[in-house]
Length: 166
Image (cartoon, rainbow, N blue to C red; front, top):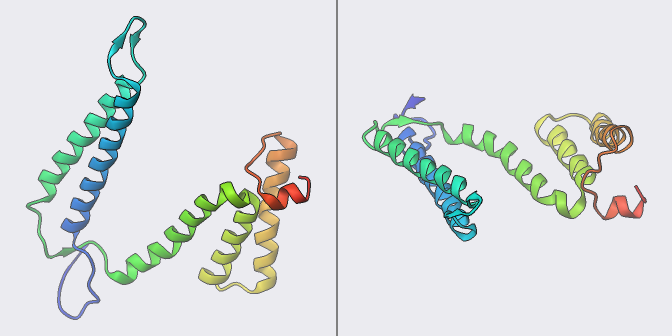
């Protein structure tokens, strides 16, 4: 945490980030409560319905968010959470990883892993192409052999794996 002062590149304040996290967790708690209400929170002949405990957890999440919001609200507005350059570095890892997770159901885990490992090594690590290609292709092959052949655990596959009959 650093103080906001002229001459720095700027960035969100600690207070802004804490309030944002409080709002995000409260929204998550509300989603949990809405989902539990859909499946029922009452008491049936066998005991609590399936939404009872998630409803209680959702309530605790919202109450915790409100408590954290009350603590964050009066905090110093001048203390900085991080500057934009630091947040840009975090986003350079977070965004490709999120794209990787979203892509797995459509292109399979092996092709997505080749793309993720290759892009990280080349873009962030600045490794040369031969080493990047060897590791980006070798790691998914090793994962395939370990999970699919040794442990007999199938992982999500895409069109390429179907074409190769893997």
